[in-house]
Length: 114
Length: 110
Image (cartoon, rainbow over all chains, first blue to last red; front, side):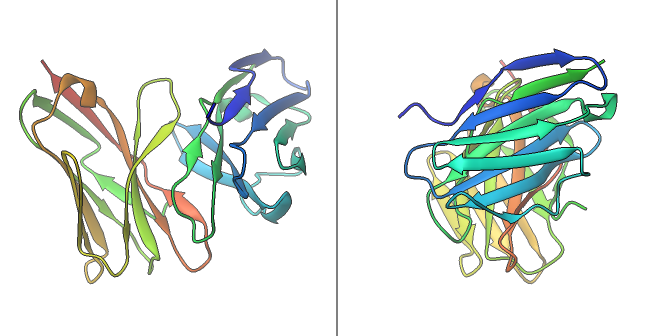
């Protein structure tokens, strides 16, 4: 099992540019989560999907952020336009079942917006 | 706002000693989980304790849960340098979200 795969590992971009982060969950996992980690705010849940359907996006900071899950093996988190305050590590995680049990995290994408 | 708050924020011990980290939360929970994060890596699940459980063990890890005090503790016995990492508690409530605390940074010196 390859685990949760995120790409890119690092992203450096300039303010105003569009950024797309990608995630491949573990096969067979029904839940997919996007988290953001910063020193100031810790780990924040941005959005999660169940069976490819967005269930709760209340953590998405603003309209500049959007997430999609077109199929069970792929999800994207897009920021357009990006701002310096979006700099953070973005994690994708997946989970096999209901009841919010164990999450399996990817290695994260370190985003720097200059 | 964060549901769980870990205490202490940072802990430094010698190899072989025990490390205890605490987590407090605010609302009722379905379960509480502990995760480890090594520098520059993703989080790794350590242990899950359900709201109707009081204690759970996994190898050198011992987790307790006191729902009356809304608190949990993680004990790592006979610590090793490889245990150096940040440790997070996370709570799941009726709403289903898994919310993480700010973490405890553990340093185990050889």
